[in-house]
Image (cartoon, rainbow, N blue to C red; front, side, top):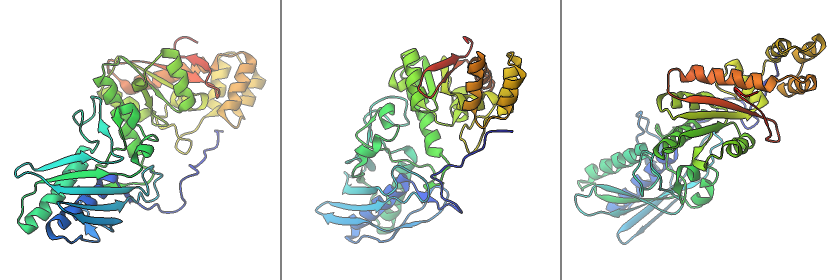
Amino acid sequence: MTARQTPDPRRPSGPLRRGWTTGACATAAAKAAFEALITSDFPDPVTITLPRGETPSFALCRSALGDGWARASVVKDAGDDPDVTHGAEIAATVRPAPAGSGIVFRAGEGVGTVTRPGLPLPLGEPAINPVPRRMMRQAVEEVARAHGVPADAEIEIAVPGGAALAEKTWNPRLGIVGGISILGTTGIVVPYSCSAWIHSIHRGVDVARAMGLGHIAGATGRTSEAAVQAAFGLPLEGLIDMGDFAGGLLKYVRSHPLPRLTIAGGFAKMTKLAQGALDLHSGRSEVDVRWLARLMAEAGAGPAAVEAAARAGSGAEVLALAQAEGLPLPATVADRAAATARAVLGSAPVAVDTLVVDRSGAALATSGHG
């Protein structure tokens, strides 16, 4: 018997609708604005080419033309993905640039600026990632060729309200200040693929490495993050909000090592890691209470307690039984979770340990220390 899986309550039933990245929306807006800068007419809808060859069309939300500038915007549709930027207006203002300068990017309202090393952009640059930049360059060059003009332009991307949206993202931890990032590697948002979260985990590790941090911690949630920060005095840049993606963090650290990694989480999540699961989401892995019951038996629990544990409906119920018996079950789980992490890290020169916390954030056990 295992604890029952629960689906993500946000996930709609039935087939899921794909959406568009902020990078795709910015590209559509920039292309329309550059076209209008040359011809005084805005294409609406405007069609762009994505990195894999798809050619979606976008309706414009707003457009305006002035002396030496053109502006167009697109409302981001993330499909059925619970994306924080769904419904945001992505605007591009395009101005002529000096001959031979090519395309220059600027951060407008609500788009962040890079202030720390470790990201794939130089310090001081707008937080417009490399693939969206390439998409915008290609779109502008396409329009320029069609009209026989040079592709010299300044593109300013703005997201009204983006600074508030950024507070719900990793940007403050990554040293991206003033707004959101313009992201996307394919132009398409695949609902519930969690690719943006895993991308943020990777960038968090990159920033920590660039800052020379010797110890980082991945936590499953806010409670465990607060506990691990208090336990080790880690700076904000050393805290990785890994959520359920222990595997995403461990595999990246394997190829981008740091001296020390701590994994922190509640008893149930850490039990899943101890069992060998790398995706700790309730819909994709589950607590095996019979496995926990066997650990209790190995620790000397009586037959009645072991039988009750094997029939339990949750990891929390098993934990309560173990605590009533005075058994160090959290320590065993911490050690087994650390063993799973070490197995994923392989020969990478990374010391790894784990911290198991209760629902209040109090430490229950750390690996190797009981």
